[in-house]
Amino acid sequence: MDFSYMVFVVLLLGLGVFCIISRKNMIRILIGLSILVNAVNLNFILLSTVKSPGLIDPLPHAFVVTAIVVDGSLIAVALALVLSVYKIYGTLDVRKLRRLKW
Image (cartoon, rainbow, N blue to C red; front, top):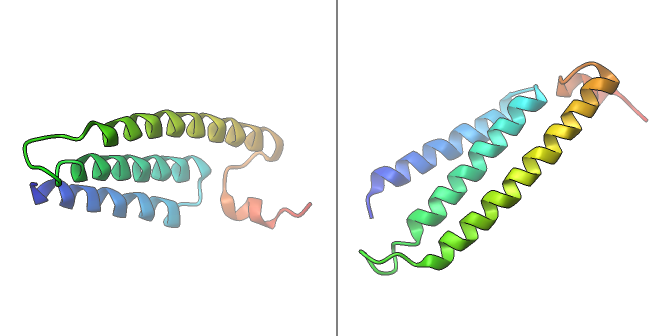
């Protein structure tokens, strides 16, 4: 297994966590979440080659394809929620939306 790919996965994980923690815009938080999920999927594919070098286990690939479908539907629902929040409140700033009380 090449460790340069693992370094790339760790950098993607760091970038995704940084986007989720530091950004106050809801769309940027969703982009960070998508980067984080893609890093986890790439890590899962990379670790599928550890058991026997040269051979690839097809089961993790099936899990990753399923995770990509679930992630796509999650992002679609989240973007619909963001659009609805913007129509109602006129902002996507998370700090301003936290101040709103029901």
